[in-house]
Amino acid sequence: MAARTPARSPAKSKVAIPQLAWNKVRPAPIVLVSGTEGFLADRAIRMLRDTLKVEDPSLEVNDLEADHYGPGELISRASPSLFSEPRMIRVTNVEKCTDAFITETLAYLEAPADDTYLILRHAGGVRGKKLLDAIRAGKGGGIEITCLELKKDAEKYDFASAEFAAKRRRVTPGALRTLVSAFSADLAELAAACQQLLADDADEINEATVARYYSGRVETSAFKVADSAIAGRSGEALVLLRHALASGADPVPIVAAFAAKLRTMAKLSGGSMSSGQAAKMFGMAPWQADRAMKDLRGWSDAGLGSAIEAIADTDAQVKGLGRDPVFALERMISVVAARGIR
Image (cartoon, rainbow, N blue to C red; front, side, top):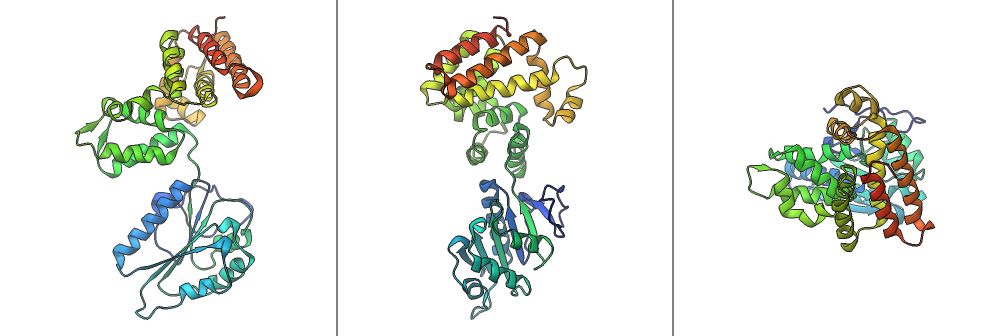
């Protein structure tokens, strides 16, 4: 059985059941799929369905919507069929469930039906807390699959790396970084990009492979603009900015990319620790620490402070305070490319 993940669950309720990552899903009479990351939740449920189908191809799959639940629906779906096939009951929108759903599911937990797998998808919020608390306390003999949003680039990097490792395909760190940079805003798009690259018959997937498939997306990435400006290549950064804006990029995420890069640099500025130590201290991937240390070459603390102030001002300008967001972006790039020297 897979090990429990660290306790990231609600602290107010006692948890007596295994809490597993999305890719450790396994059959159980009750499977609570919680968390805000819908893509991972959907994938976990598909993986569970596929596992049960392999075990018994006659698996009967039924769907319920907890927010439109009517009395008796759960018992009806869980009742034995004529040929006693195993059943998987997928329930969505548990975070919006009706009172009848809570009452009847609590009763069901007292004696779950044989050869039946009840999958409850709860995307967050307090609705249904009594039911969730009962499941987490152990009623029904269930498990919880936690699908938390992947917010850090390091988490998305690990996700993409696992996509290739699962298919035993070689991929370079540079290709992974480029891919994450280009698709960091949407996990589903990142996963789809990984799957398309997996279909390539190259022995190794590298940065050139990624560029061949996603050259436009990569070139217009907000992080590409930021990388060029931080390296002092003002003209290149401006060209990439105009390309990004012409391709429909929004100014707000571009500023956010600059802010993320400069914040990471500020954390490591003036330190004497190794990239591994810095990564551990600040909760980032080692490659991120390595990159930030390289980016810091030629920067002073005063320059960092000045650039961060310029980014904060630009953020306000592109969010409505200013009349010309493009001018604000170009001015920010000039300050960053000059390493904060105005």
